[in-house]
Image (tube, rainbow, N blue to C red; front, top):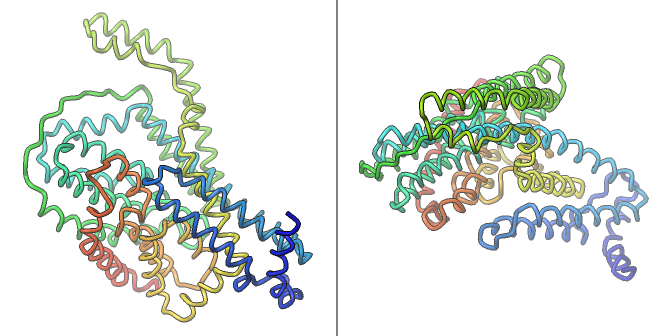
Length: 474
C-alpha cells in the first residue's frame, strides 16, 4: 500500500512543484487528473450499459465517487492543503442534500398518487375511449407532455407506456413509434417547468433562471414535440385495437393529495421568491402536509371502510366488497421507501464526481473552450447534442459548475437543449432507458435511432423558435 501511494505521489509531484504557492492545485495534466477522468468515463460507460449488463447505474457512480475523492484527498493532503479539498467536498454535499431532499418529497407525492390509484384511473379512462392507434399515439404523447411538467418525465413516460402496451402490445411497429413519441413529449414537457426534470430543478435552485421565466420555453417545447410527432403520426395506421375493459376506482384521498402537491409547489415557490430561501425548505413543509393528511386517513380509515361496506351490502355490490377487502391504511413512510433510490444515489455520484473533476480543473478548461472561444449559442446547442450521448444531469451540473457569464436567453437555451437533446437517442434520457426495459424487444436503441433525423428536425426548430420569440433576453 505504501509503495502504491509513493508511486502515485511521485507522478503527481510535478504538479505540486508548479502549484505549491497557489490555493488551487491544477491537476488537469497530471497522472491524478488523468486517472480520475478515466475512472469517471469507465463508470459512465457502465451506466450507459445498464440495461444490457443488468447493473444498476448507482453502483459504478458511487464507487467512482469514492475513488476520485480518495485521489484528491491524497494529493491535497501531500500538498498540505487538505482544508481546500474538505471545503470543496462540503460544498458539493450541501448542493446534493438540497436537491436530494427536494426530489425525495416530489417522488413521495408521486408514489402516494400512484398508491391511491390516480394513474391507474387515468389509464382506464384512456382505455375506455375506444380510440384507434393514431388517436392513441396523439393522446399518450399529449398527456405525457402535459403531465411531465408537474410529475417527473420518468414517471410520466412509464405511465403512458403502460397504456400503449395494454392496447397495442401485439403491434411492435406501433409500440416503437408510440414509445419514441412518449420520450420526446415527456422530455419536452419537462423542459419548460422547474419541476419537470432534474436539470431544470438544478437551474432554478442555482438562481440562474427565475420560476416564471421558465415558461418562456413553453412554445419552443411545444414545437420540439409537435414537429417529430406530426411526421411520425403519418406512419401510424388508423387501426382499431382490441377492446380492453377494465375499471379501477381511485382510493380515498387521491384528489386531495394532488391538491396538497400543488400547494407544496406553491410553498416552495414562496420560500424561494419571498424569502430567498432554498426551495427545498418549502418542499419539506409540503411533506408535512402529506404526513398530516396521512394521519387523518389512518384515523378515519375504519369508519370509512364500515360506511362503504354498509353501502355495498345495501346495494348488493359484491365487486365493491371484494375491493374493500384489499384496502390498507395509507402510510407516508412506506411511500417514502418507494422513492427511486437508485436514481437518488446515482445523482449523488454524478454531483460528487463532477465536483471532483471541477476541483481538478477540467470544468474550467472545458468552459474556456466552449464559452470563451465559441459563441455561447453554439456552445449551448452543442451541450444539448452532448446530452444525447451522456445523461443530461452531469452535463447540466457541469455547466452550472463552470458558471459561464451568459445572458438569461442563453441560460434558457441551455436549459432547453439539455432537456430535449436527450430525446435524440434512447439512451439520452432516463425516460428512454426506462421504456427500453418496459417495452423490451419492441422499443429498442436501433428502432429509436432510425427516427433521429426527424427528432433532430424538432430539436433545431425549437432552438430557432426560442431565438425568435425570446431574442430580447439575449
